[in-house]
Length: 268
Image (cartoon, rainbow, N blue to C red; front, side):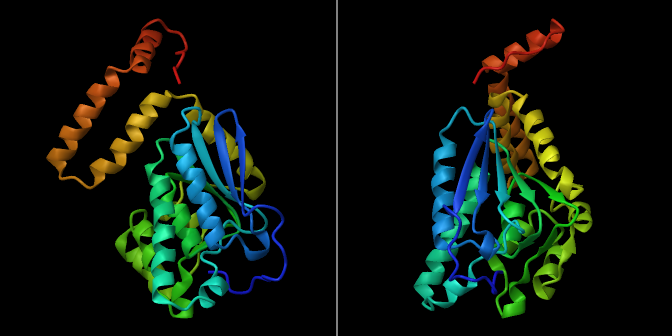
């Protein structure tokens, strides 16, 4: 959580920047002086972009990144401290939860590009993304406990990535873990030297963008939905989705290309 930012200094431009290249959209948190703390305005900007991306068939992949020295230092504690009303906090955390669920609901993969710190709701943001690649200098924590606040909403995403005991340890101690530990625990997928981070992100987005958009849209929704099902129901549901996927034009093209020993030409 960000507690020491200089809020009297203006942010350099919009709180969220959008960049697009070859179907890959990068959403860059842009409050570097505040270590990209999730202010109300930033949460609103993220929600607007997620709503827009959900209906954009041309998007193949989304990258979540941060400007400056950190990925995201969590909620803006100064802003929160200035609004000490229960209704305000209820609305704020509900708003943040909608953003995290919006990432999961997107039909395309979302990759966290992590450098510097990812703490509290910033760590939650990493855990909410489908994939995460971090610099070897990155550090992670759910450190609200250090200011008397248990990171309850971050615990939802965190506990769906790492084991129960590891997640609870982080939550009750506020301890930081390094990138090597984060990849070992399953919070992130890959750790690379900091100067190779952009290249690693590009490799992953290029790999994803080369696959069938239709298959990925079928697959992401199915993957998360089946996790909450009983085993038999999960297989029934996955079987139906796979059958529907097989009827799609991309599946016919993919099989024809495989049998003909040529590269497939995917539809949008």
